[in-house]
Image (cartoon, rainbow, N blue to C red):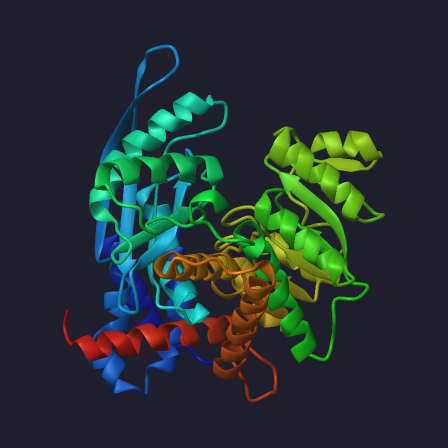
Length: 448
């Protein structure tokens, strides 16, 4: 697919001028626009109605002060956000992130990506994202509770089961969702499915914790099978050690692959024998129960620990599950030089543009995050359906639904990303398939 350079540069220049200094947002928009601009060149209805330009502008961005008191009686102040990006196909839907790196740029990139990701699931969900520059690490449960209650005291007036349905993200797990839902229920005096990722006792869904990691590997396996290949015997490098990485590793093992790396912010472990089920159970206890550092795994099993990221380790498949921009252009080239033949992104936008270019030019199987990690929000959407109907589905039903959604995402990407050479450009396919559904809804509404 050829991109008209002048059209793309003019569009990106306009985005940069309207959103100065928001580098993460610029990157996300450029990655999508590089696929969409050539696609709409012979489709005047999208150009005349300025659909892509409108998609790159959030419906609204809400910013607010969050005051709370720590355990020593000190008043602390953080900044909270909710970016409601696009609700053309359903209520805004997207996670809440608590992390010191949270900025408006980061949340706009995430909300923009979420619009396409939610469209790909086939479920009626628009795109949004929120969070705060609050770090829950090292805080007591009472401090986290006070922060979450203060955060929701402001946020509750902007959300609702048919308006905006947040979920968890980095720094926001079951504990934080519980505190926020409890405060929403108290303020709104109603019990509705306004948040997803809830505990099973109060409206949550089975397999939500596993869904993003499982979905990432289902997408990968679908790509391999489409290319007459499979997971059996493949060496897999995974980054991260949270829920996404852990359940991606579990599913790789179940499908016959071998996981050789996992990581945290201090570095990564390289286990040449493979992280089997027993060792993965130790990793889960280490990271999610004891909240230890990954070097303890290396000490326990006598394997290598290295600072940095795992992308110089030879592998057949790379599954980045940590954070944005964790694969640089040079690291992408190192992966390719060491034999990597497929990448499935479990984190949001984990590959820099130079890295994406390297993957695309090489012709390897590359599943962008908006397609590969859509399993989490898909099950969140199913949780919304269960809440609305006041029912709970069995795990087997949800597993089948998740597999079906990821298969549909793969097939839509394959349809829109088919090339004349018989291969599939999954990046273009994901962008175009996600765009068309939202764009056609926006056309139906007129100029709004």
